[in-house]
Length: 374
Image 1 (cartoon, rainbow, N blue to C red):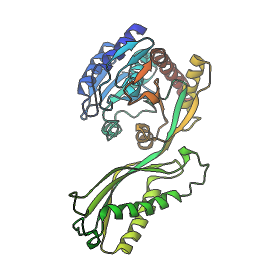
Image 2 (image 1 turned 90 degrees about the vertical axis):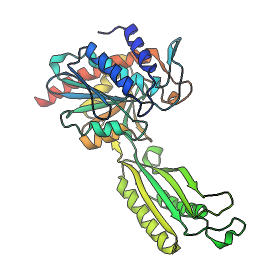
Image 3 (image 1 turned 180 degrees about the vertical axis):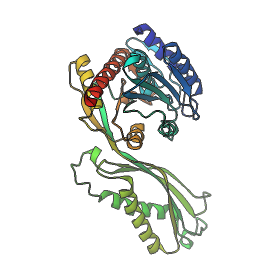
Image 4 (image 1 turned 30 degrees about the vertical axis):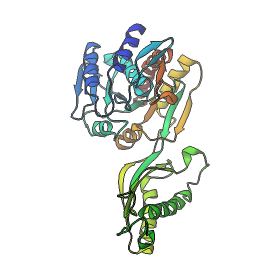
């Protein structure tokens, strides 16, 4: 059993290794050495840079997975009173290291624990997409480490469509004579308003809270070639979040129909789109052994029933749950509101409590899984 002092120092050492997306190799090698020192039978780094460590044998196989990468930006690492500051302190090195240390205390005879630290979660999910292709892992249950808060379990995330829209009006003019050509920037906003109307009128047949509605945002716009020339081309990136009552293709098909209609109406204007990301929504079964185990562990430690959260974001849990078709939740110590900020931090007591909750959750999962097999 590791001491609180060791746990705090390990978190601090991890935070001192700057690991923005696609620059996680130094942290991966550090964690590989830590895993071997803590008694894992295997610890390897895969082809995209994920660290994967295994302890124990047999069923059940439980995956504890977090991400090593952070958003860019240095936050000086320091222990200030009851808080540890640093980039990734909340999102998501505190959950990652708490899972590692809970796995280190796992009794080898009772099943298999897989600890995974994946790359590029804050980017294009390269790490988790590669991890789920590994047929040798085959977990029965998985927890993805994110700062849900110690008293909350995230059981649902929305899906995501990222669409790149192009409008090309086939001509341009001097800005002093704008009537000689259509304006691609103006046209693409007209197109976008038509698409918004489609999205706003999707009937999801459920209550209108944020987790159960289609939401959308323009995240990037680029157009024009010069300050005194009307723009011939304009590109727009649209981020669409999709509730569990729908799938990505439900929304995409409606948008495709509307874009084709607009193209016919506009005549000479070229309108194209490309799907950059399509991640399906995911919701865990609240009565699964995984959710029940985590609820029990939190009840034992915190003396209160945790909230089951349905969030409006999209995470690696979606990919794990949908592709592996297993129970998956997201959980971990940390304040999500401090994530990505200049004062990112984690409450040390919550971090240490997270280690114990993960350990107890694993114990309950093993017990419930074996009972189901009888």
